[in-house]
Image (cartoon, rainbow, N blue to C red):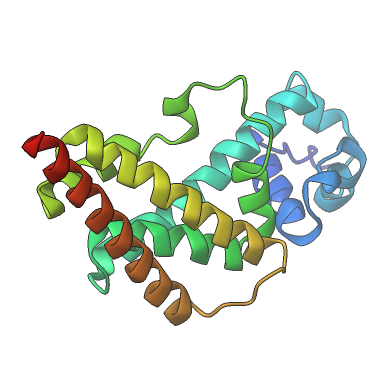
Length: 193
Protein backbone atom coordinates (compact mmCIF):
# COMPACT_ATOMS: atom_id res chain seq x y z
CA UNK A 1 0.00 0.00 0.00
CA UNK A 2 1.54 3.34 -1.02
CA UNK A 3 2.10 5.92 1.71
CA UNK A 4 -0.54 8.61 2.13
CA UNK A 5 0.22 11.81 0.29
CA UNK A 6 1.31 14.54 2.68
CA UNK A 7 -0.61 17.77 2.14
CA UNK A 8 1.56 20.83 2.69
CA UNK A 9 0.81 24.23 4.23
CA UNK A 10 1.28 25.77 0.81
CA UNK A 11 -1.27 23.44 -0.81
CA UNK A 12 -3.75 24.17 1.94
CA UNK A 13 -3.21 27.92 1.61
CA UNK A 14 -3.60 27.80 -2.18
CA UNK A 15 -6.79 25.75 -1.85
CA UNK A 16 -8.11 28.28 0.68
CA UNK A 17 -7.28 31.16 -1.69
CA UNK A 18 -9.11 29.34 -4.46
CA UNK A 19 -12.18 28.88 -2.24
CA UNK A 20 -12.03 32.53 -1.23
CA UNK A 21 -11.98 33.64 -4.86
CA UNK A 22 -14.93 31.47 -5.80
CA UNK A 23 -17.19 31.69 -2.77
CA UNK A 24 -15.96 34.42 -0.46
CA UNK A 25 -14.66 34.42 3.07
CA UNK A 26 -17.57 32.33 4.39
CA UNK A 27 -16.11 29.34 2.51
CA UNK A 28 -12.94 29.50 4.59
CA UNK A 29 -13.92 26.72 6.96
CA UNK A 30 -12.31 23.37 7.66
CA UNK A 31 -15.08 21.27 6.12
CA UNK A 32 -15.19 23.13 2.77
CA UNK A 33 -11.42 23.29 2.62
CA UNK A 34 -11.05 19.55 3.31
CA UNK A 35 -13.59 18.91 0.55
CA UNK A 36 -11.55 21.02 -1.86
CA UNK A 37 -8.39 19.14 -0.92
CA UNK A 38 -10.07 15.72 -1.02
CA UNK A 39 -9.04 14.84 2.51
CA UNK A 40 -10.26 14.93 6.09
CA UNK A 41 -9.75 18.02 8.24
CA UNK A 42 -6.77 16.33 9.93
CA UNK A 43 -4.11 17.65 7.48
CA UNK A 44 -5.44 21.18 7.91
CA UNK A 45 -5.05 21.07 11.68
CA UNK A 46 -1.72 19.23 11.43
CA UNK A 47 -0.36 22.18 9.46
CA UNK A 48 -2.20 25.03 11.20
CA UNK A 49 -2.93 25.44 14.90
CA UNK A 50 -6.30 27.03 14.09
CA UNK A 51 -8.45 28.34 11.27
CA UNK A 52 -7.43 31.83 12.41
CA UNK A 53 -3.79 30.97 11.71
CA UNK A 54 -4.78 29.70 8.26
CA UNK A 55 -6.81 32.88 7.68
CA UNK A 56 -3.64 34.87 8.42
CA UNK A 57 -1.81 32.92 5.71
CA UNK A 58 -4.70 33.49 3.30
CA UNK A 59 -4.49 37.23 4.00
CA UNK A 60 -0.74 37.13 3.29
CA UNK A 61 -1.36 35.23 0.05
CA UNK A 62 -4.08 37.65 -1.04
CA UNK A 63 -1.84 40.61 -0.20
CA UNK A 64 0.96 39.09 -2.26
CA UNK A 65 -1.44 38.93 -5.23
CA UNK A 66 -2.48 42.54 -4.67
CA UNK A 67 1.21 43.54 -4.66
CA UNK A 68 1.63 41.79 -8.01
CA UNK A 69 -1.16 44.01 -9.41
CA UNK A 70 0.54 47.07 -7.98
CA UNK A 71 3.92 46.11 -9.38
CA UNK A 72 2.48 45.29 -12.79
CA UNK A 73 0.62 48.59 -13.14
CA UNK A 74 3.52 50.70 -11.91
CA UNK A 75 6.02 48.90 -14.18
CA UNK A 76 3.77 49.12 -17.23
CA UNK A 77 4.41 52.85 -17.47
CA UNK A 78 0.89 53.43 -18.79
CA UNK A 79 0.19 55.81 -15.89
CA UNK A 80 2.38 57.93 -13.61
CA UNK A 81 3.38 55.79 -10.59
CA UNK A 82 0.99 57.38 -8.07
CA UNK A 83 -1.95 57.06 -10.44
CA UNK A 84 -0.86 53.51 -11.34
CA UNK A 85 -1.17 52.56 -7.67
CA UNK A 86 -4.79 53.73 -7.65
CA UNK A 87 -5.54 51.97 -10.92
CA UNK A 88 -4.03 48.74 -9.53
CA UNK A 89 -6.19 49.02 -6.40
CA UNK A 90 -9.36 49.43 -8.47
CA UNK A 91 -8.36 46.72 -10.94
CA UNK A 92 -7.72 44.33 -8.05
CA UNK A 93 -11.18 45.16 -6.64
CA UNK A 94 -12.74 44.41 -10.04
CA UNK A 95 -10.83 41.21 -10.82
CA UNK A 96 -10.32 39.75 -7.33
CA UNK A 97 -13.47 40.93 -5.54
CA UNK A 98 -13.38 38.46 -2.67
CA UNK A 99 -9.67 38.95 -2.01
CA UNK A 100 -10.22 42.72 -2.09
CA UNK A 101 -13.04 42.41 0.43
CA UNK A 102 -10.91 40.26 2.73
CA UNK A 103 -7.95 42.63 2.55
CA UNK A 104 -9.57 46.04 2.46
CA UNK A 105 -13.12 45.70 3.76
CA UNK A 106 -12.54 43.99 7.11
CA UNK A 107 -12.27 45.44 10.60
CA UNK A 108 -8.73 46.79 10.83
CA UNK A 109 -9.12 48.83 14.01
CA UNK A 110 -6.57 46.72 15.89
CA UNK A 111 -3.91 47.28 13.21
CA UNK A 112 -1.46 50.17 13.05
CA UNK A 113 -1.82 52.72 10.21
CA UNK A 114 1.43 51.37 8.74
CA UNK A 115 -0.04 47.85 8.62
CA UNK A 116 -3.24 49.11 7.01
CA UNK A 117 -1.41 51.01 4.25
CA UNK A 118 2.26 49.98 4.09
CA UNK A 119 2.78 51.65 0.70
CA UNK A 120 1.72 55.07 2.01
CA UNK A 121 5.16 56.55 2.66
CA UNK A 122 6.46 55.72 -0.81
CA UNK A 123 3.30 57.15 -2.38
CA UNK A 124 3.59 60.33 -0.30
CA UNK A 125 7.16 60.69 -1.59
CA UNK A 126 5.86 60.35 -5.17
CA UNK A 127 3.29 63.08 -4.62
CA UNK A 128 5.82 65.42 -3.01
CA UNK A 129 8.33 64.86 -5.82
CA UNK A 130 5.73 65.24 -8.56
CA UNK A 131 4.06 68.36 -7.20
CA UNK A 132 6.72 70.17 -5.17
CA UNK A 133 4.42 70.05 -2.14
CA UNK A 134 5.92 69.63 1.31
CA UNK A 135 5.63 66.20 2.87
CA UNK A 136 2.71 66.99 5.20
CA UNK A 137 0.69 68.49 2.38
CA UNK A 138 1.55 65.51 0.18
CA UNK A 139 0.34 63.26 3.01
CA UNK A 140 -2.99 65.13 2.99
CA UNK A 141 -3.30 64.71 -0.79
CA UNK A 142 -2.54 61.01 -0.45
CA UNK A 143 -5.17 60.54 2.26
CA UNK A 144 -7.85 62.36 0.28
CA UNK A 145 -7.04 60.39 -2.87
CA UNK A 146 -6.90 57.10 -0.96
CA UNK A 147 -10.36 57.70 0.48
CA UNK A 148 -11.65 58.48 -3.02
CA UNK A 149 -9.97 55.47 -4.68
CA UNK A 150 -11.12 53.16 -1.90
CA UNK A 151 -14.68 54.37 -2.39
CA UNK A 152 -14.57 53.60 -6.11
CA UNK A 153 -12.92 50.22 -5.52
CA UNK A 154 -15.45 49.28 -2.84
CA UNK A 155 -18.37 50.19 -5.08
CA UNK A 156 -16.87 48.08 -7.87
CA UNK A 157 -16.08 45.12 -5.56
CA UNK A 158 -19.66 45.13 -4.29
CA UNK A 159 -21.13 45.51 -7.80
CA UNK A 160 -22.59 48.93 -7.03
CA UNK A 161 -20.60 50.43 -9.91
CA UNK A 162 -19.35 48.83 -13.10
CA UNK A 163 -16.92 51.47 -14.35
CA UNK A 164 -14.26 50.65 -16.87
CA UNK A 165 -10.65 51.42 -16.02
CA UNK A 166 -10.65 54.23 -18.61
CA UNK A 167 -13.47 55.93 -16.66
CA UNK A 168 -11.62 55.44 -13.39
CA UNK A 169 -8.45 56.87 -14.91
CA UNK A 170 -10.21 60.00 -16.14
CA UNK A 171 -11.95 60.61 -12.83
CA UNK A 172 -8.79 59.99 -10.79
CA UNK A 173 -6.96 62.58 -12.88
CA UNK A 174 -9.72 65.14 -12.41
CA UNK A 175 -9.90 64.65 -8.64
CA UNK A 176 -6.11 64.58 -8.24
CA UNK A 177 -5.72 67.82 -10.17
CA UNK A 178 -8.49 69.43 -8.12
CA UNK A 179 -7.06 68.34 -4.78
CA UNK A 180 -3.48 69.32 -5.59
CA UNK A 181 -4.59 72.70 -6.96
CA UNK A 182 -6.65 73.37 -3.84
CA UNK A 183 -3.87 72.49 -1.39
CA UNK A 184 -1.30 74.44 -3.44
CA UNK A 185 -3.48 77.56 -3.26
CA UNK A 186 -3.94 77.05 0.48
CA UNK A 187 -0.16 76.72 0.95
CA UNK A 188 0.50 79.93 -1.02
CA UNK A 189 -2.13 81.78 1.01
CA UNK A 190 -0.52 80.63 4.30
CA UNK A 191 2.94 81.63 3.04
CA UNK A 192 1.72 85.17 2.32
CA UNK A 193 0.19 85.56 5.80
